[in-house]
Length: 367
Ligand SMILES: *Cc1c(COP(=O)(O)O)cnc(C)c1O
Image 1 (cartoon, rainbow, N blue to C red):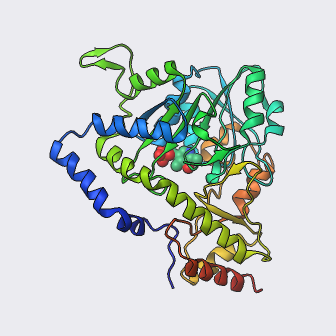
Image 2 (cartoon, rainbow, N blue to C red; image 1 turned 120 degrees about the horizontal axis):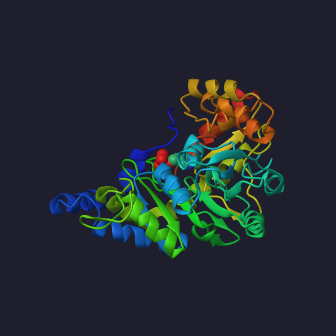
């Protein structure tokens, strides 16, 4: 038995004709930067996530950087985010010139804890940056309410939650800017690096559009300094094909998650829980166990690949030594980091494979 953690080849096989056709068209047109494929994807993606505008970017990381800069966050400002995320979230804050302030996460859903938020706000706080981790929306109602009351900007990191819903709403409208990654393994993945920023604020959208392309309005006319953070045409064409399949894939992920929950029920593991009114899209299916490392080894020996997201919470990474945090600073985030084990999860995962993973786990747990 051999069960991969993700199976990008299985997904490619199911859409191979469409993908090769889309790439061929770009090759024939030799129009690799910008143009129709990018504009078409941006418009389809904006409407899918419920925002007025989408701007394609070179990665999720660049989308986060541009979001902060375009919302006017910079030197002297403080941005509040969570410690259990990928370092891209906090890199973007530093690169915008702002400083990072962490709040802990909810003990059950592992996302930004709105109850911890108000105490973390200082006179310098300008922005709240929740992360919709593992595919589950953060509790955006109270987060947006606190932001509104305190006059703060909300920028969301939605790199893991394409298609998730909060109180029936797509996440693209919850925040001034919402940032997506299309890293190949994400729920909507390109065949290389790619990302997007969505917003319903016209000023933010036009500023980001300038920033991704050297501040250029048209050829030779640069009104500001920007970056080269563009989404390329081949990735955009691939993403347009895949976007049409996304809802079907998310349903399959949710079905796989339901099967896992049924088959792992009663084992000494903490299973993922969906917060009320939150449609989790299971980018990752993360179980918690105090024996995480031992389980991971036993599963590997049985051919079941697993992942860790993320074993060192951001506040304890060497890169952030200067912030002076210690183990114990954010206990809920630290618990997910030390006990979380990501099981194989992708749309093509079969019930037989899920049975095998569950069997291997049962054996490893000696039950
Ligand atoms: C993947 C990811 C990013 C970064 O996206 P890239 O496209 O790899 O730059 C940022 N935040 C989170 C939570 C992610 O999972």
